[in-house]
Length: 217
Ligand SMILES: [Zn+2]
Image (cartoon, rainbow, N blue to C red; front, side, top):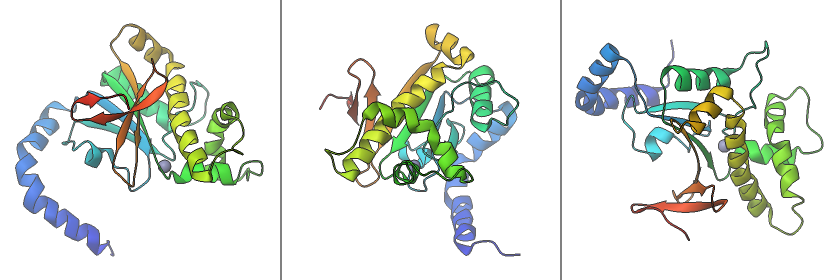
């Protein structure tokens, strides 16, 4: 049997250092179950781990990762809905207080959408999945007056806002948001700098987050 030696080394480091510090927490979580207050929807991208970015402990974040941190609109059909199932469990069972949609810079899924735009491969899982942001791209208009990187960043940001709208299409999310039992938040992580922005729905803009909280630029 082969298992990547890097992961064996990493697990040994975990059992030697972090596990002893977290042992009682793991034991309690095993006995009483998980009660995370925060659900994070983020990209599969290996550079954007929410547990690392938010310095989270076991049991604190309920995480769903998919290509480009998307949520399809509510659709109670007979298809398999992995994201919807995770949302249902987090909202209905765990009763999380926050759902954070965290996008990021240099997203390969968003870049694939732009590069394949107009000629998607119907047999391509990524193109099919990324077609979810077609309305977002249409709302932005053309990209003639900006660089490719600026356009991609705009699309990455706008996609987060659209995903927040898709979340509201789930009736049990909508009712909890209306009853102020649940808050939906957008965030954007810059891979190169490590900077984190948070979406301000009043200003319809992303604001940098600092130790003091979210501040206007
Ligand atoms: Zn991504």
